Image (cartoon, rainbow, N blue to C red):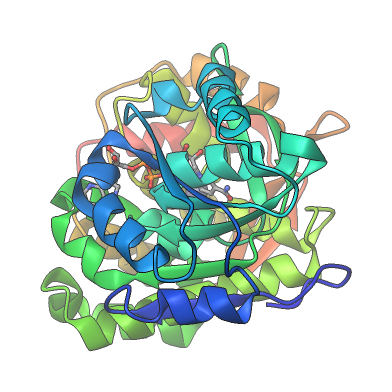
Length: 358
Ligand code: NAD
Ligand code: ZN
């Protein structure tokens, strides 16, 4: 990935951690201190293996583990990490390694962006969502009080290395949550990819390694290209918010009991619904999209919710642009655009659709 002003970094997709030491060596990471930052789940499964690999290039490898869960993506956890780094005498040339899902990646990236005004970090994402989404693009941060991702920084990793065999230990609900973002990638940018996902549904269910590799690769290319053109979200990057405007509102409304990708699925169906009602999508295309989410065990309907509350939350969302919601709609499957004219009535009808019996 080549970000205009930033150095190029590699995104490696592998089936093991065998090539990790070699990749780090190529970055000049030898004999620098390395801190593996991980949560209690990913850590208990993989931190020892990763530490053993890294000990091949550095004799100063330490591990910082925090309790798993979004509720720990906080400044308190970052504070604990700063203390650990100071105690371990980490300086400007040392390295953080994020080993885990999006929570770990966001938190580690933020600590790396701020510790001593910025040190190197690499991403070893272990959830499907973090492999195709959060580990790429350089957005880092933590939650603050009840505000998600309220405090953060743009800080690009030096390397993203994914071992896709780690997906075998992920629980099915988490796995399919990641599919929510993957389907979004096809919908906003690549019709052929969307069709390919339908054709390979069985292999994706079975986690066929070759299909997973191709899927993760294609999703990373889509996310990478969008971010490359617009690293700080001044325009084009907003397309990645497809399904997220209503999705985030539902996520909050449900008090985070639904997973992120599940809310993205609901939000995507609502956005596709508006695209259909406006005459951009044909009815059968809209239904194909809806059924695609069902096929990947994602929700497309929910119990009744307060439409007013959802709409108010949407309006408070940071995607507002001078009072107008920046909403992402589909011109066709594979072709999304930013629209600032979505009305309250359209939001109400689309959200209402999600609460219908289907
Ligand atoms: P997560 O990091 O909480 O991981 C989900 C669960 O899976 C956790 O319990 C974790 O411990 C566990 N886990 C991780 N890897 C595992 C493995 N291989 N086997 C078994 N269990 C494993 O959540 P997530 O869904 O990966 O990421 C969500 C976070 O990502 C949110 O905080 C969201 O804000 C953030 N995010 C960031 C960006 C970005 O651009 N920075 C984009 C999307 C999402
Ligand atoms: Zn998302």
